[in-house]
Image (tube, rainbow, N blue to C red):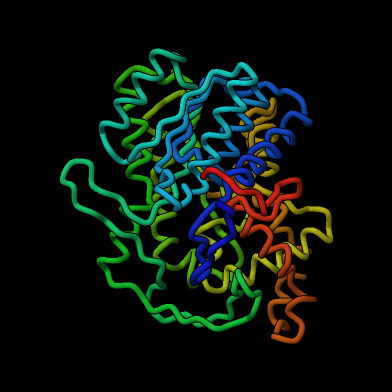
Length: 386
């Protein structure tokens, strides 16, 4: 079949297999171009099929030569329906790793389930022994309780007051307005259950109890802060409460696992399947892309994670943390000169000047590439087996 993007309500419903493979190939090429570095050797990535998780696995494997295990929950193809982008990207990673002689295993399974943790533990024992880096990069809107089966659903909402903001349509590039209503106490609690640090802690505890963690292991989870204009929907909203719990979990694990290192890395804003549908954030991203590209500071996931590994986690100097003991790899995004220009454009943007003040084309391209569309060198008119 010929695969074209199917976009509804800022969500792409399909993926292009060859484009997804190209996305992985380009990230591997970037890392190889940088040359090898001294880094982790036995790596588990939970949420490994796309975005920051996939980049974490690529940098570890193709930059440091690490053995890797990747856990993801993705959807295979059914009839004429394509698989999810993460499914294709995970398979592409496995192919490239095999070709390079790198030891790797991928598990498509519910990362929240006890059985998945047990399966990963057996993989680690057979393949690598002591895991020295655990990356927690899950992006899920729902979480089944592994003991009771109760299903928790996250809510992208404010706390206290409604939020009204301009937003950018990922398909048309048009400006619009969106209102987000405040969350109930139950919705706040459920969002923390899904997106907080509880499952991350369960993973580390299970691995430690099974004896497959190195005594001086490192574990890192990813988060975002951003500028004040996005706080109502992000840092001060339901997601923010979950991220506060994630950060508190890191500090608690540091107290519990002496000799190990637990961090939350605050990363740069990027177009992902989730961020593209958050009102306000989509427009902020398009403006940010324009400003950072003009300053030569723009990074994608692979550039961010390569810098995280080589300039933060595995550098020779002492790791610099902020007052909340977080790694700040969003430092270029939050530079005063960058934010000053972004906020000036944010205040001035309208339907007439949006294509000048914001990188609408770049935002749309990044959105499509998350799903394997828009890559040079890929024949999008080819009849494919999906």
